[in-house]
Length: 464
Image (cartoon, rainbow, N blue to C red; front, side):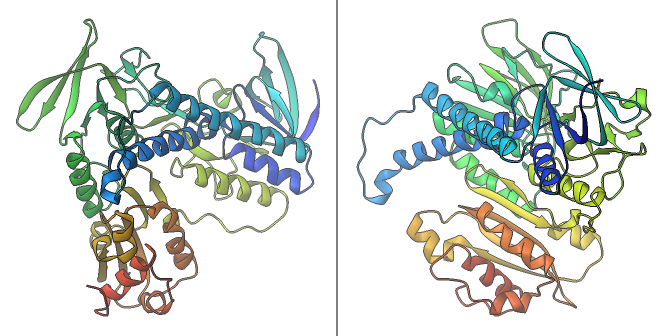
């Protein structure tokens, strides 16, 4: 056996590296096992590099519409190779930042693939095939997830690709079919459409971004169609023929079957957990439907073994994994953290217009039999939005009619991903609708729409 640690974390994504740093802050000797780049999918192939791509797309969109702001620009074009390079450089910088944080917090990095063994041990296989055993009092599994594949949509990384390949294509495709319209699907739809690719979205559900409030989904669909994106809802991909120069995608809709030709098919149908081969079965760790079963503080059924992030019960979001990692570590270090409230987790989608939401949708609140008040304020009535040329979208707030509890918030528009945290804090503090109305919001800002939406719910709105 090699070294013994207080804590070993398997995986260095936003769950793993945050858990490791918190454990070190609490005086533990910590090691992190990582087979690839520090920062995991989020920093290297997900959250961060996609936002860099989205920003480039947004800047190009601004330039194309510069005349709307009284500025004449001619000859602008997107250098797709340079856009991709910038994205990779941003990701690389963030990964180096994790190296700095590990050094600062005296966290050791062990390169290789970690496999759980009995008696709180981990077997690490490095890139040369050499196996080394490590031990720890506490082992945290944070192995994340990857692109999910459908039986009739096998990723070949040539003509049928997942999100990783979509970030590093050597040249921009002339046409693309995106299967799935969750956050990954609509973000890439916006990027490639803005860059000049003819984009078609195929979504099995009746609305795109189907987890969002229906009003949000309809608004995004309207804006996407206005920008030239073809959207097919209540539709499914039956087959993809990749034998020719182009992909031939057979799509079944409510009105029949049609074939779409494109250069690339992007599979964006969700994620699958990375739990294969990490020793769960051999050590008796219980799983259910591809997720590791844990308690409110992320303990598995095996003493000293914990699991956080995408491989557990919560939503597969970076900020959820980070919060779980901190709670997990603080609990086994003797602190008394609150269990995570999964009903107050914000979700953000960074296409344009942006989407941000937390809590119950209007439909979910009604299905629960709750008596509600709904307030909605459009950005078309916002002075800041008009000045910025970003009048699309709205803020929608849902309150319990009897007690004024803020049940949910749903936003679509420019910069709403920066605004949703106000609602998360408000709900954490059990803020009521009238308290939001009386909280002075600066003018002119997009955030005034929150105050106005609350006022609309109670018949007090000023600017409508």
